[in-house]
Image 1 (cartoon, rainbow, N blue to C red):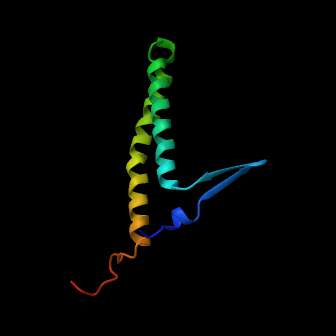
Image 2: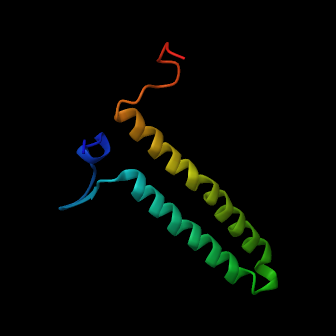
Image 3: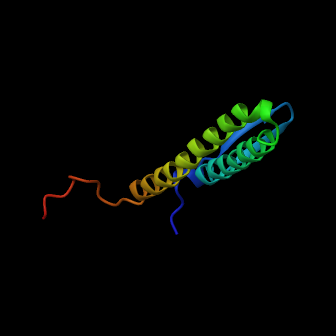
Length: 97
């Protein structure tokens, strides 16, 4: 199995004497996105219990829905990135039909 640049060069964030190392960036981004989706919908659901906060709840549901649209974009970016790294020909690169 060939290592991808994503696995060879982790993202390293330094906080004082500590380092946060993120290896599989697209997977980590997808997990963070899923957590945010859950938070928006939970907060939106709670806000729907009170008439005065229904509008705010609606906005939280809208933000959660937009993040649901982002989710397949993250997966697609990861797939396209991995295919390019593995050396598959890009569209238009081949002269054979």
